[in-house]
Image 1 (spheres, rainbow, N blue to C red):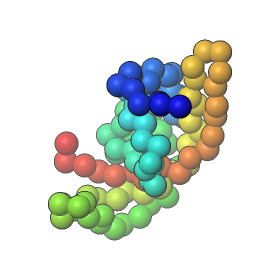
Image 2 (cartoon, helix red, strand yellow):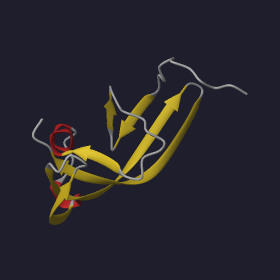
Image 3 (cartoon, helix red, strand yellow):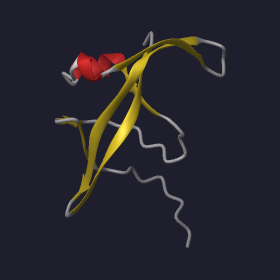
Length: 96
């Protein structure tokens, strides 16, 4: 079966208790990343964030501040189906 397509995947996504309009789905990724600005916009409680003081390096050598780890319920829906799972997100502070 040939599944190559340029069609967009359109699904409803809820992180925590907030609906999220745009997400990047990367089924080959080994990490779930959440920008600190998005974490704050979602109104998530800072007490739920397990703090880490470390620096990550990207392939280009740029340093990224790793703020911490948070466990969030993620619900993905495409009527009439949905799935919900608890995911560990790495919260990072990016300059953009």
